[in-house]
Amino acid sequence: MSRFEELPNDFDESLNLSPPPAPLHAPPSAAPNAFPTASSDSTPFPIDASRLEQTGNIPALPPHMASVRSHTADEIVQMMNRTPLFMTSLESTEGEEGENSELEALRALQYEGTPAEIAQGFKEQGNEVVKMKRWKDGKEFYSKGLAVLAQREKIRSLKSPDEAGEKLSIAEGEADIGKQKELEEACYINRALCNLELGKFSKSSTNVKAYYRSSLALFALDKLTEAWDACTRGLTIDPSNAALKRLGTTIEARQTTLRAGEQKRQEREQRAQKEKLMLNTALRARKIRTRNTAQPPDMEDVSIHLSPDPIAPTSTLMFPVVLLYPLHLQSDFVKAFSETDTVPNHLEYIFPLPWDEQHEYTLRSVEFYMETGSGGLIKVGKKVRLGEALGSPGVEIVDGIVRINVLPKASAAGWIEEMKVRKGKGVDEVR
Image (cartoon, rainbow, N blue to C red; front, top):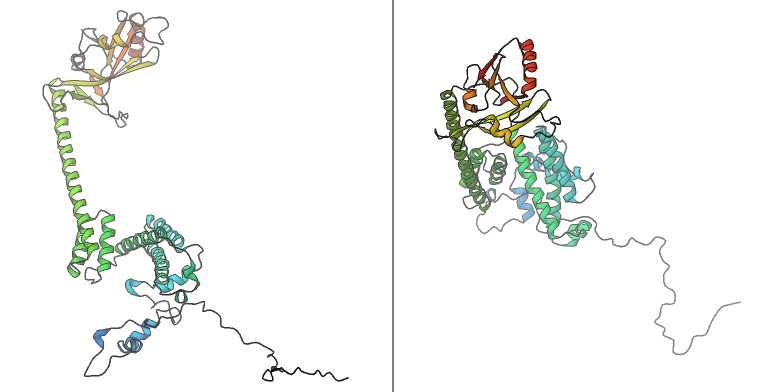
């Protein structure tokens, strides 16, 4: 049965009722470029205008051709070998200042995180190895951090989303960009420090940035003379460089502060020498002898001194004194015992003793004894001033501390006999 249908009278005969069959495989649709493309004004190599001769009415070469014509074949091969796509050896791929930022950026792709996080990680690793004085390793870590930040800055500087590709879609605020700038500055300074330690800083350099970074690194080490030298050399090349001018002002301010600090230190040392001289003079005048052992106790701010003025000859000697109660293994400490005081002057506010349950220690029932340098004992009267007792023959102050034994009269004889047996010495008396 045939399948025919009569068309209406108003049918448009221009219509194509038999369209061609669709192809078996549809052509691929144009996909957006996922990779950055070179901008129209970019050149494969930097242009050296000094090598291009302009003569007569000959028009200037196009930028791409000029970038090639301004270099020799060997220079072009060398520059191409620094590009990861064309390099044939890692030994000759270093660029400006011995670094290859593109290569380091590719190496950094294996790390996860934002550019700032990756750079921060490299910086921290560099700081760790620098603490161990591994300058070469530290330089490598800082260079990797700089490469990551430089690559991010390059992507940020592209003119359109098509040029930047997908990476431009990463949202960055002013705080993020500011953090990246701080990291970049820190990595530059730290790398300059490594270069200094490795001996790679040359005073004959004409790179103003190298002088700035070296000066900043030297300033961080407080090597102000060297920092000032690097800064002035950079300003000689570029006298209007604002960053070097600011750094020079900072270095001068630091030098002024250090000079003032040094002057104060010298004044303190001179005063300390005067105080020491006056103290020794006062002790000799009173015939008071002192001796230090190999391991003196830590007395902090307590010491023999003149008061109220340590450099005045009319001042009074003050002594740290330990009052020992040998029968009960107890003690009291008097920080400043005047040479004009007697022992009872201080016992008046110390007695009664909290551990003296038998009430053996009263001003009327106690006696005082000091050991001599030879191991003997001297009995000190209650009306004897400390200065007089210390000036007695045989008495000496050991490690800057005066030791006075306090004993009840009823028990003093037994303690003295025990000391005689132990040291084989007698007892003298100072009334």
